Length: 341
Image (cartoon, rainbow, N blue to C red):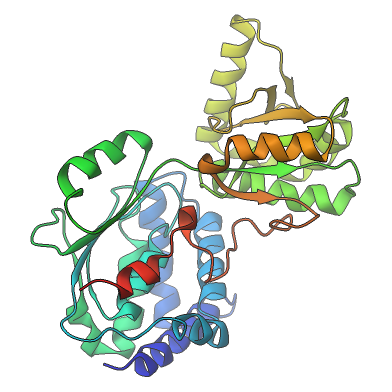
C-alpha cells in the first residue's frame, strides 16, 4: 500500500467528516455519528456532543490534503517489514489518540491500540470510515486490551502512569508522555475579541486537555475586571453538572482554608506558581518585564505543552487546533516511527 493511496483515502475521509458536520447532512455516516456521540457522552459525561464536534473539527484541520502531503513527505517511507507499534491512548479529551493513529498508519507500521475506557467509541468510528475507503489497511490496525509481542510503544498518561510504562515497556523503543499543561500571556493590550478567543483556550473540553490554558502570566498590578467581563460569554458552562461540582468543591475548599481567590461564579482565579490546576481553577502569576517573564517560562518549559499569546507563540483561540506539524511534548512521532528497524 503506497503512501499516495493512504493520503488519498485520508483526503476522502476529511470530506466525509466535513459533510457529516453539515446540519442538513443525512448520510449514513451522520446517522452513525449521532449514535456514537450519544454512547460516548453516556460513557463519559465530559464528552458532550459539542466537545466531540470540536474534536472532529480539529481532525478536519489535521487532514487538510496539501498540508498532510507536505508533512508526510518530510519522512521516508518505511522499507522492509512493518513493525507492530502498541499505542496506549489517553482519554482526557475526545479522540486524544488520533494523531498517533494517523502517524503509525502513514509511517507504514501496524497499530495495536489500547483505547482509554473514557474514549472507546470515537476512534473506531473514524477508523471505520477510513477503512471503508481503503479496506486493505484494515489488517494494519487492531484494538486490544493487552499489548503483547509489540516492537515499540507510544504511551500517553499521567506522571504516575509513566512509571508503569517504564516498568513494562522501558526495554523497547518508546515515547512516553507525562502530564502537560498550557499557559497564556496577558500583556494588558488585549481587546474584547482577544479575551473571548482566550476563553476558548480555557474552557474547551472543560479545561481537561494538555493544550488548555491552566495558568495566566499577567503584568504586575494587573486588574482582572476586563478579563472576567469577557468570560461571561462562557457562562453556559454552568449548565454542566460535573464542571460545577468541581467549581463548588474547590471554592468551598479555598474558603475553608482561607486562601484568597477571585471568581465570577464559574471560574476561580488563584495566584500560584504551579502550572497544573484542577477543573474550574486557573492559576495566575505576575511578571515585571519581558526578562522576568522569560525566566518564569523557562522554569516550567518541561511541563508546558504550549503558550498562548497575541505576540508570537500560539494565537488566542487556536490552542485546541494544532497543525499536523505540532507534536505532543515536542517529540517527533513520525521521526520515531520512521526510524524503527
